[in-house]
Length: 198
Image (cartoon, rainbow, N blue to C red):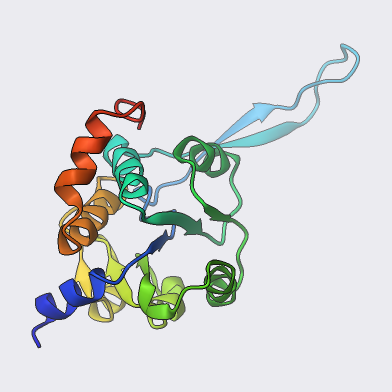
């Protein structure tokens, strides 16, 4: 079986799509801004806090809404902790949000147990070597276009777009087209209250 046919066969079985954040849902750049810490009781602040900013692609957000309509659950597993990611995850209504995950494979297995799914029913999207343990144990492993070489070599599918530039949307389209659900899901999305909120 060729890689493309193998990837399509794997994508047909997917019920849950999980992904990394930095380099997948974003372009991997971290913007850190020092801001004066708020003072107490009107006194001048002497310290500062660091505010983190990330950029997210609207097409990924629309894709996640379309995936939900088609019955695909979604979630993220990331090593970093970020208020920005928590906010975006709430906006997207992700079913699984796991930040500060030092052992991504352990978290992955916990999610499978909670959902009652087999490895073959879950896809994972990554970009760097930290993602390989999960990618090696899921049914459909995906590397984004900007992923490290080792990650691309071990993936079943490489997205046309880079992380933060619509890569997650590429994955969702690929899975839903393999399952024959894309057209109907898009039509349902266009007629739903989700349209325009991505």
